[in-house]
Image (cartoon, rainbow, N blue to C red; front, side, top):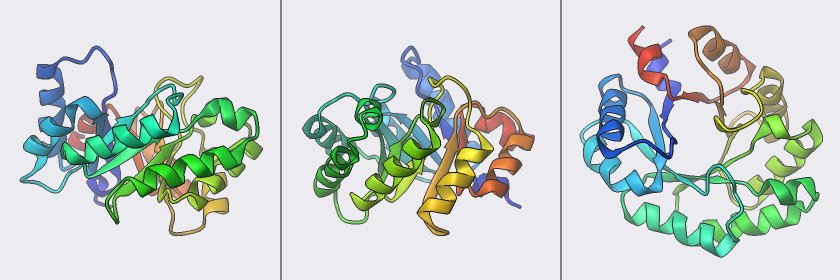
Amino acid sequence: MKLERYVEATYLYNDAGIAEMRNFLLEAAKYHAAAVTVPAFYSRMARLLLKKGHTLNYAAIDVPLGLLTPPAKAFAAADAIRNGADGVEVMANLVMIKEKDFEYLKREALLIRSRLPNMTDLRFVLETSLLTPTEIAHAALALKEGGANGIVTGTAYGKSGVKESDVRLLRKILGPNFFIKASGGIRDLSQVRVLLSAGASRVATARAAVLLEG
């Protein structure tokens, strides 16, 4: 297995300065990470530093809260694409998930999708450690129906890291070909292998360079 095909590098710390982010992006490119996810503020830098390689550049939108209005998320997503991002990862509204208003999620996804160029990757982030299996299932299906073509399990801001059971659930309900990224608390290669075996399309970690170097 060529591990770099399955590992993405994520760096969403709000105190990461320009030099630190530059080093992170250059390391991701050096070790041929499949993609990076960074704050939208850094989309232009990521485009410039990654343009000669095969590492894709995703912009994080409204992470970790997910409480911007749908029009605000749509504007931010479109702006990130204009600034050089290959795709976006948008934080889902967990309040509306807890309220069981899954139609809200679908409408939000539809609006954001309508503001992006055709074929742009639109992934939504669920904080699965804060959700029940039923909430995970309904939210993921609503987002898929709204035009999302990827689900990310979570961030470093959840209660715990990604669980193998959550990945298996997402794979079961979303089908064999839908993109699922396992993210949150991944620190070693044994976790990577378990999550890929559970059905993750890729895994993401801030430690991507360490894992790929090893």
